[in-house]
Image (tube, rainbow, N blue to C red; front, side):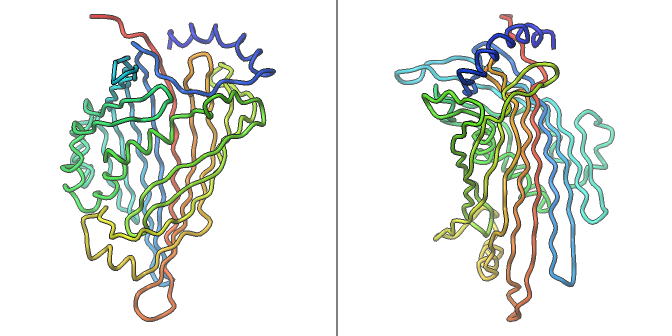
Length: 324
């Protein structure tokens, strides 16, 4: 935290200027610096048929360390970011039956049940290549051993894929990398487009469109930051080809017969961006996805599957990496 105090001294003057002339919103990793972040994901989902109801809640907490290094690629410079999981805690409550894993408590692993495969995650991670515009060029996630984790237990396979597959990681990074359009320095109440996409098994591609808006200024642990409001709406883009995200042909065929659809699905939240270090100090996003489907039994019965996910990311330390 001592390194943060140094950057806090640089914050006040730029923000006085920013109120009148705008705030440059362009997240950048700084060459030779280490970023420590806490990531918390809470998700609640349920399945209701009108006759039976099941509810699943999960809470996941990561501690991440990212080290940024400037490298040469092609005709320009890119940022190579090595990301490592240093701690992970996850709990799943499925209709009152609770499984829990904590990498800091190896003696409690018998409680983990289907989460036990997470034991191999701390110390591993992935590598990102980010261009000068803040876009992810490539990702190497081989160290995460995704395929082993995803296939170890059918109960947690989908969840592990969603969190640890290279494409999922790339999407999550893209969602959390905050940059206004090139050449735009937003002023308070200025907005710019939000556009993201993801794939869900049996449904296809989901797109979320909306806006980022520079809402004003707010404090993060005493440091003045630009507050960016996030507001988007999900839409479904039907896919013409068969999905193979679950390695389960029967599920895929059945899901098509059920005519899965979205209804009232949104993404909202806020980001506290510190222009003095060109990096967000806090991110809080809530995604609500409401899925409805027909029961393929010849009746008009409907299944309702609401999913609510809250993602919080906090920068807890930024420090210069000293040569060994």
